[in-house]
Image (cartoon, rainbow, N blue to C red; front, side, top):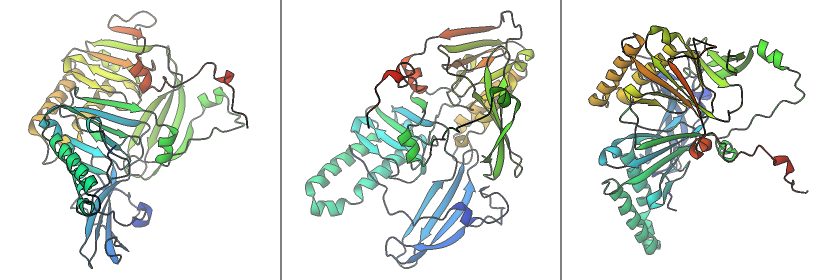
Length: 457
């Protein structure tokens, strides 16, 4: 399989953010020309071209609606060699993500791609792969990613032609195949697999569903967790906490604010939802910037059957219904051709009105519709979609809301309980192989595992 590294040499190892920022304010602040205190830190570091000392400039900043980043720039006054890169400073997501894009036209080559340094990019038709950690994190287009791959393969070609002409000729032939990909003479597949969950491939039809793009979230393996520097939490032994203690106690643990990265405290509580099951509610309140967030985790096991709940929203009273949306639940509004995939917005326990407002905020804060590079047609489509959502919130538009949860851990309040709700239909269904794969059930053995003979020492 063909693989490559990044053209050029990486700058010298950068110091940690803690050693660069010593101010009392947030370590990562939005980039602004009016912020006079936001200046890059300068660190003397070794030039990897001439092995004399140069200067690395580091700037801790934050991309709006995306994540914290470290912008580094190296320059050497002796040999005039320069280099710049972007390093992610955001937290690793709970699940990994895999984007599978079927490239059908040249317009698909203009899709914006966020590729972290731990992500793997592949084109199966050419048996081509960009391995994890062979390139630094980058924000570019699909065409730009292919151009970087071509530059990485061509950078040592002059030396190869002198030492191994046969290998150089093979690489020239493969580079020509990569360049022809940009013409899209035939369909091909682009796969971006990121165990950290921080990579992204643009959906130009947002908020509508993209038929050419398949997004899959998955649980990391032990090898992937080790690659990311994560360690599984060990269960506490000799615990004296009972179930009653957990229900009556609010647990607290230290974390970092997702907005300003300042130290914060997360509260966790086990709650019983009537006519449903137990859930875990986690809430974080940052005293530094005032940001608040909440997330819901299912407190029970995955149900034997998936659940599909369909509600016909007819008036404003339906917006007051309680909604439990698990992290494995998909949300659909057929009248608007809208679908929010698994993992979107995470787990939430809110009202139907709160869920629609979260979707509205998610659409309005799409990072690829902001700034000078935004597409006017796409921006107008998002604004039109936002206006339709507002009509639903105002009770002027009747739609169907569908909660499809393969794990069966989502819930929508029945205001007629214990009788049936005439406006709501609940369907139980058998999961398909792909849904079990996303939930990690295909490789899970829950019966007869104790009967297997353990290896003798």
